[in-house]
Each structure stands twice: as C-alpha cells, then as structure tokens.
Image (tube, rainbow, N blue to C red; front, top):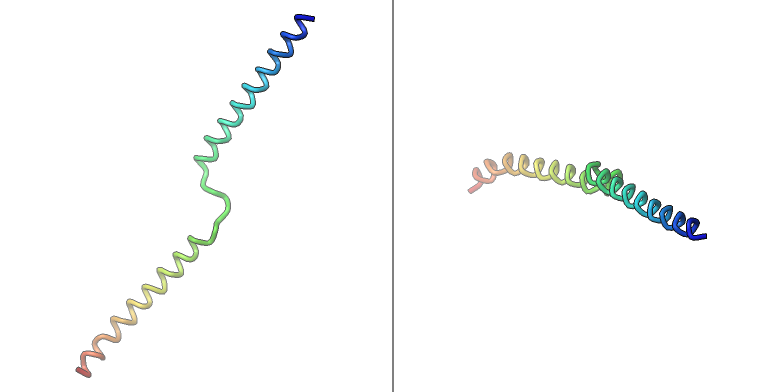
Length: 70
C-alpha cells in the first residue's frame, strides 16, 4: 500500500510539472506571435493619416488664393 501511495504522489508531481512546462511554452510562444485579432485601430490610423494628408494638400492649394485677396 505504501508503494501505491508513493506512486500516486510521483504521478501527481509529474503531471503538475508537465502542465507547468506546457503553460510556460505557450506563454513564450504567445509573446513571439503578433495578436491574431485586429481591433480596427490600424485601419482607422490609415484613414486618419490619409485624411490629414488630403487636408494638408487642400490647404496648400488654398493659401495662395487667400493671399491674392489680401
């Protein structure tokens, strides 16, 4: 009976260690990979940058005309 109890303890410790190793491997793999889901902020940044560029281009075209009226 003592051998059976010791065997159960050894198996339990082995399962805990194996689970810890797998958890650590998964954590390190998730740090190396980029996130899979995109929350849309990247696309919004592209749209905002394009609008700002168009606004700058429009303002450079308007300024000489405004100077003519002064």
